[in-house]
Length: 193
Image (cartoon, rainbow, N blue to C red; front, top):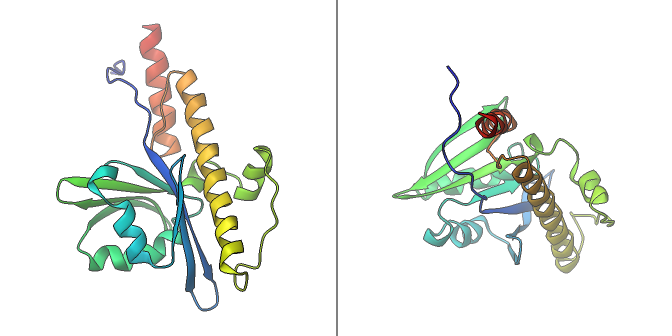
């Protein structure tokens, strides 16, 4: 028997991140993250994780576009080496959702390609952005940092707009599209009954 949703909706605390690396050598060049106000960048995975996995960011969601197939793979060794507890959901070899826990704190890494089913460049164009893809293998770090910043900002704005749209329909951002659809239905049903 279906019952109306009784929990209150809530806005999600989320940020976006992106890694730039050379695909033939897997040499990491840059990691960037954007939280809706500030962009920061790092050149090492351990520095990035130490900056974002803090008690102050407990409960935050971190999105990367196609991150479950690419970006997140760079983080796994360090997360395991540092003793974090990991659990997740997979589709083939892609990690769609990765929950990271340490003591009483937790954070969630999500692959936004399962939420926004278009290439990031097309999403950016739909939001009015136009940019030139640098040669991420040889571009000067300043140029690469600006490209990375824009990628993170575009993804953040797209997710924020999607969350706003869900909110107007009486729903909220969830970890996967299937769960979101069910949540939206329950929210609508509970308003009508």
